[in-house]
Image (cartoon, rainbow, N blue to C red):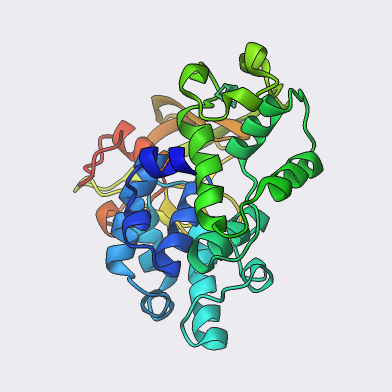
Length: 309
Ligand code: SF4
């Protein structure tokens, strides 16, 4: 805790810790790197400073600001969450772990994080950082979910649960890093049983990655505007706009633009892009696009206000 008080990063939701701001940050950081998380937190929190402001907006407004952050189902669930918070809790985020867990898009980790950080309820958080610190402290190669939870519960400082949880996660992020942990400056090195082989702990969980081949015909009108469709409400890139992407198509006579390799956490998509013409496209800068769609449009020379990385 002393170490955390001295070394914690000044993050926007730490400086002004409202429950909504904390919840927003936790949902964003589920699958987004810290730097990008901060950027998206800023733009979402400015536009939607309360759950009520989001609840009264269209889900497309949330998706529009979410563009590029990936895992768009999070944006849809967050919008649904804001509406439940208004309907069932008078616009205030509920405080208990169980109430939080029942909301859309909130799993055990996020419920524990919000309950402890925003409402000081004594529940321990378990994330990848806590798992790594635990595996190294106890010299355990393959800690189970139950092992890690027990360790976190046992060590929780019940008087300061929010700071304690953040301290554990911050230690994992800044000192007990996945590679090259800085054990010489670690505040808990005296109790560390796995320090000498920290780089091997914990052993990675095997994850099978699949590669899928997809085809896309990018149709552009005489003004350079592309034909875009809005994707269905469920599935990959739900609700976002983009050119049609299919598993098979007849590309005879079309100009081949190239292949975009798009890597998601659990699969790689090779999208082969062909160019065609259409009567009338739409302005891609006024609809929500995924990063993949932006890359496809850039490949086809379509002008985007915000360039693709
Ligand atoms: S001593 Fe090293 S391996 Fe052990 S907890 Fe600290 S940083 Fe991690």
